[in-house]
Length: 357
Length: 254
Image (cartoon, rainbow over all chains, first blue to last red; front, top):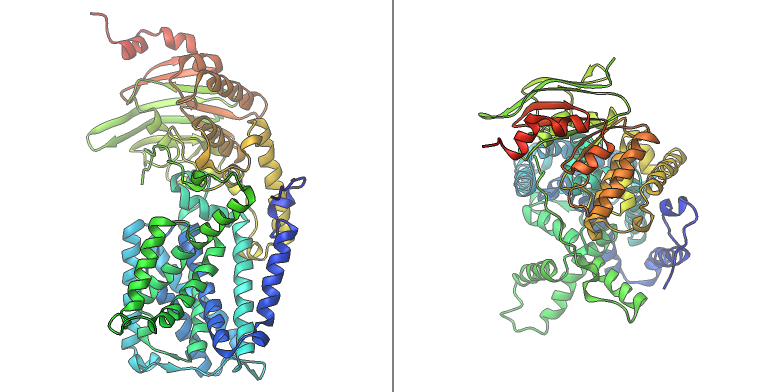
């Protein structure tokens, strides 16, 4: 087991807490950079999706896991990002302008949703964001002049400085780079006052405001940053699937995004990436399993059923998600043989009678 | 110029007059205590000062500038910090992080600087940690420094909450029943700290408290409330001997 002796405040602040982390994350990064040379086209395609959904998951994680605001409408931000990218690319705007624009437009949409969120909480906020999802979906379907309605829009591969990223490797490096940048940006945010203000709002709004946190400002900010990341994810998604239409951005997509956060582990950045990986790998496992199942079981509904069961199972048996499970396994090995069953049990919180609003 | 003044403060909840024309003045550097039986309106006064409830009438003045009409988070930025009777902490964060949130009003960096974690942000973070570490030292919280608040005993949480309020470097500290739920030993510590906060940190304290031992030990002046109105004001001994106070607590002799 590793003991960290702290002799400097900087040790609390730095991104890598000890040499072990540098080694393992470095190894992971090296493997990912080498991936295009190691694995086949099919696995590469899955890695693209994992990166894209990681970015979206990170955005949603900031909102749900760190600011404590629920959103069942994130597919709408995904749509705003995807359509912005598609339309700007059709106009011949280079990707290093269109991608920030996708983020910016999504962030603007996030601000619009964030404003009513100031007055709504919990289930009511979920319903409001759900309504927003439906509205955006409907607008995209009806505004045929701009979005092509149900016939959708086609995208060309990304082009940077005249180099077309149509191969697997180029696009993968773009996705990977943006994922790493998103993670770094969020880590920076979470170790500075803004991130702490988000966490404060999650745990006790009244106390946060008594500490000088402007609730309105930070809630809308969280919505905007979350939407911006989702917008970037949406733009990459549009390039990946190269054809977008309204039925890709339905309520079901939003719920799938929330699933990433819950399966990965609410309140951990790792959780967003693990959840995204799980979400991408699970359908593959299901389709593999179909070969061994009776024909009348392996129908189209199977995936939804398995997803539902997995989600319920996680909520009941592992509310901390995949990352929480990993923490427990790691602690078990670190403390062997002294691990106790109740070590990660949430303590009962004390009476809260001063919930004033 | 008065330091902190409440004039004719009042609030009605429907037909219930919770606080009625309460006026008092807190001098710089003193410990001023509000006492009264349950339902006297003590905590309501704190919530009025924190602008959590809008006052129906009256004024709250910090250095002759009115607070009424402002917004709750501005109150903290003006240098008024408070603790809650039933503890409002950030449960899923460590003690250190809880105290660091207290430094929020001193933040200077913009969002972009924070996203990039520029050297200026790092310097500010280091300075914030130094300030918080002094509070940890002051309240003897070092043993809990890195534990989650959710796992602390009640007495520990009470001290963490006091620490969070101190980390804001307030000019006026509002303590809502600092000794409730504490054992005699912890109450004794709390009395020490309140004296030290006044003497060494130079912070003015406005407190609501039931424990009369603690009240008479640390307070300079006491205000007694009953049913939303002021019934007595003076030194702890004067107020305790006041007939209206005795009547409010014990009832009239038959």
